[in-house]
Image (cartoon, rainbow, N blue to C red; front, side, top):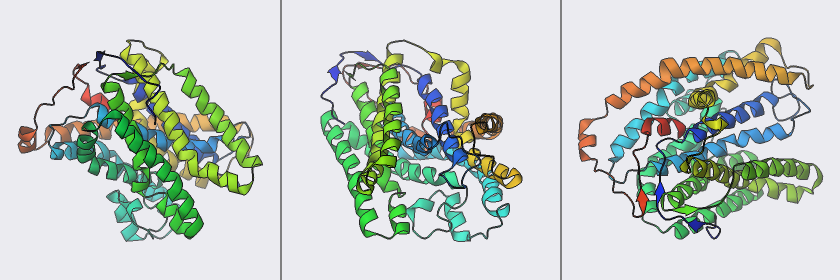
Length: 401
């Protein structure tokens, strides 16, 4: 992403908390939930509302927002002197406890209740979150289906101690050019895979963690640019409006354009959503850096955001079990009330998972970080021209998944 439109901002004070980003996580998770609820057409999903379908399909790209946000927040709290073992230890405590509990519900929903045989190697790969790293897993999304995105995140986490140091040593312009090249590369890989590989192999290539690294890099670039004093005058309503306009234009184009152009839309949708996500993140962070607050800073939305990882882990299992129990709902706008009702149920369950598994397990695990790694961690050196305040690491770490 070009930085030509940015202006240098001199001295900057980094906020201790970024509550608006935590709240945005909830909306991204709810978008994914809406996508799964309404399905992809035909007899998929639990029910479909003509009022929001097919536009609700774009909710599946809520995961793109998570990838960009992860890159942003990892770079925002990056400590150049931190021992890599400390970083990995904390990521394990953050990700796996809730994942393992939700996996039990996922196995019941996707295998036992569905009457499907378990392919054990594929299921075990999902336990360790490496299911997208290999072709020929069965089914395509084994274990708890939604955790394919955690498999993508896992590669980024594995590389970040190195990526963070490399990125911190590059000029912002250079990093932006590399990131832009990576986003173009996503388009080229998607085009090549669709044109030259079989359907299953093309799908696997476009789910592989390496394919999504430019989205994480976009978030990292944005974080470094802000920390180094660059600003882009942008109010949140601008990128949010652009997102709605893009979604409308995308689906109108898919219904009207020739097949070759529709393919190009599909090859670039991830990058467009990633850029819009980065602009939304940028606009809200700059707002908080100016000391301004809004509805996203309200306690209830921040709480929903804190629960959103658990929400994401269990929402599809609940929707799938409801489909088995009651069948699909009629495809009419009244199904929106069912969607909201199910969203409330999933939120309650996600609060339970957060309050009794995710948060206490993370705190327990963090306290047991090996002391030899902590002793080898050096205090981070503050970058020039930036006045930093201590960051609320626990809050930001929960926002990073």
